[in-house]
Length: 317
Length: 321
Image (cartoon, rainbow over all chains, first blue to last red; front, side, top):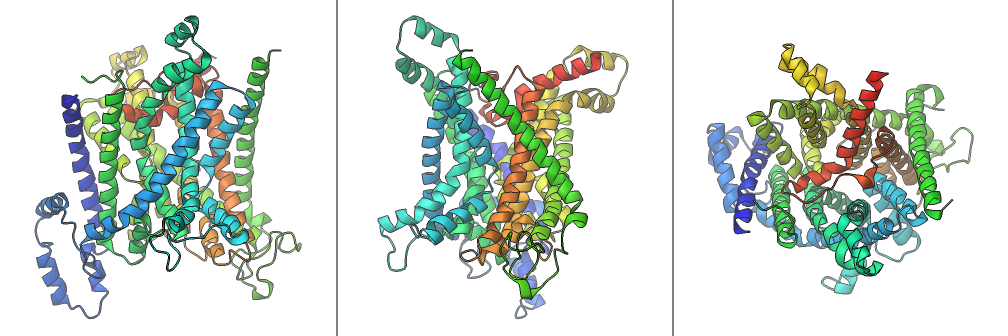
């Protein structure tokens, strides 16, 4: 097991190098390079820009710059924001809890509903429910998240007035968990829609595959009741591999969270990213790109290790 | 007829209908986009502040009403369709070409080329697509072509994986041996022998990629980094509509319906094509996705195995004709 984890960790190294090279390249793709934002500021003279260039080490050869930057990423020195000069990593970490709360609730909701739908569909294959569910999943996958969000706001916030249309807390209610929950319902459902569809499709096809295997016939021949066969024999084998989806779908989850946060004014990392885009805060943009990519690498690693721990069928060698 | 058999028939029936619905939707959308100049009742950019916020179906001159500047919604939707479909198709072409070339090179050449290219694919998959798209879109002046290229160049990875796994199967077969024995060069084998044999899975992937690209275009246009006003796109029409949302919901509903219809049309069509190319191996009877170290392949399974097998059989049958 330990050797598997070590090997899996080593496999992530080329990914880390690749991600950092692309991230570094993107930064230099910015129009006018990393200092472009200063050239628009009339109070900053050309000498100032030259000095900043020296301070930031931008006069050095590219590979030295890359190594310095990568070392900075590694030690938590992700640079400072253009406006305010705060450490980028602090700014990102500050927004992390809000995003993770949203992503976590949406994901739990989606897995719960999606897997249930998938199981029911596989057990009653080709039934009316199954047909509706598979068609419904396809329709849900075609919905633009932001439009679904707007429609949800229109019906539940504007017309019915049941739920708030955006933000995380009402004024003066900061920290009230009930108020937070009320604000969380709509964005979590909107973000969960597409993920639910994905999970139901995978759960259904994974369970169907298992249901037709020989050991299931053996279990039936032994006289086990259908419920027992499903719960004790089929489901563990069908659902464990789906843990990999947690890692695989992570980039899509981040993308979805960005869109959802923008519509609902949810003060998370996605919102930070869009604000940074509008303000041309390149350090934050680069920081966010790197943060999400690193998180995806870590997520996949953890998902793979969990599967290896739970599922003896995984070949460790 | 037993209830199970009846249900099976019903299911095949609905599936066909969904694919048919997808196909018809796609054809109608393409026609309406092509014929937009002929059938649009007005110039989509023509302002007329005397007729702001007209409701749909209220007058013959403005069948679907007008927006905050008195522009005709129907005309804007039609011209917006032109833009969405153009971006969708160009992005799809970029995706398919990039993905095929990388997949072919990695699959056929193998060795270090394969390792390097596939690590590159893995790396690209670590970035959330919307983040990557927005950063690049913010750096490059947004034109129709640049938006399409950016979308295409951030979504080719799955295609590369599909193509590579196809090629790994195909390259061991006799006809490739024969081609090699006849002295065919690598380029010739890759592009004239192998490529024609993966047309079917590519077709399915391409159809689904159009759907994904249309969706992406609407995302970034909605966020303000895609198609720029006054040019109408479904995404930026929604951004506009958001300002008058509580009073005139129509303006937000219509472009959203168009996006959903388009994406759904291509998705159903792609799904139908997958089934049609392979009637025996439908989604649920795919080969085992038993967990292995390459769990990431799970992501491609859906487009991958059934389609490829079907494609090969289909082509063999087609050539024997």
